[in-house]
Image 1 (cartoon, helix red, strand yellow):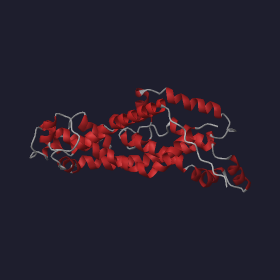
Image 2 (tube, one colour; image 1 turned 60 degrees about the vertical axis):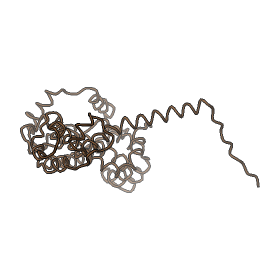
Image 3 (spheres, one colour; image 1 turned 180 degrees about the horizontal axis):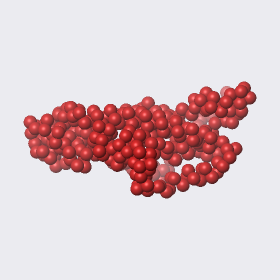
Image 4 (tube, rainbow, N blue to C red; image 1 turned 120 degrees about the horizontal axis):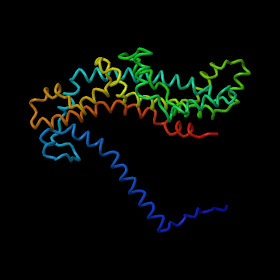
Length: 303
C-alpha cells in the first residue's frame, strides 16, 4: 500500500517577518480596543484615595470596593432608565425586524413591478436625510407623538442597510422551495412564515442585534423628544446626564462618608454608571454569536 507524505512548505524569512508583524499589530489592536473598557471597570472598583494617587493610570483595581455600584444601583433614576431602555429595545427591535422583513421580502422578487425604482428611492435615504428640522416637525407636529414612547420607536424603525442585508439573504434562498410550496397551494404569507423565515434565522438574529444595540445606545431622539418627560428617559440619556453634565449629586451624597475628593468620587460614579449601562447589551451577544458571521457574510454576497 502506497503512502504519501504531505510535504510541508518551507517558510521563508519574509513569511516569518510578515507573520510577526501581523501578530504584533493584532496584539496592539486588542490592547487599544480592550484597555478603555478595562480602565472603566478598574476605576469603578477602586477607592477614591487610590484614584487620586494613581494620577489617572491604573492597570488593576486598587482599594477594591463596590461603593460606586451600590450608590448607582440604589438610585431610582437608574432603574427607571433601565426599565425604559428594556422596553424600547424589546418593542423597537420587534417593530424594526418585522417591518424590515415585510419590506425586504417583496423587494427580493425580481418580478415585482417597479422594484428598480423603489430600490433607488430607498437607497437614496442612505446618503441623504430629511434634516433635523423637518424630522422634528414631522414627529412633533404632523404625527404628534412628541413626548411619547412612539417618538423612540417610529423614527428610524427601518434601517436601509439592514434591509439590504435581509433582501440579499432572501435572494440567496433557492427559488425551488417557494415554487414547490406554491404548487402545493401555499399562499405568499404562508411561504414567508413557514419556509423563508426559518431558513433566515441567522440573518434575522444579526439584524435584531444591530437594531437592539442602536436602540439601547440611542440618546439623541430621547434628548430631542423626551426632554420634558423624565419618566420616559432611556438609560442612555441618564448616562449622558451623568457623564457630560456631571449630575451625580444624588448618588454622590450617598458616598459622603468615602475618603478622597469629590472629583475622584464623581469619576468612580461615572465609570460605574458606564459599566451598568453597558453590561446588559453585552450579555445578549453570546446568544446570537453563532449566527453573527454566517448571517452577515451570507447577507452581504450578491448573486
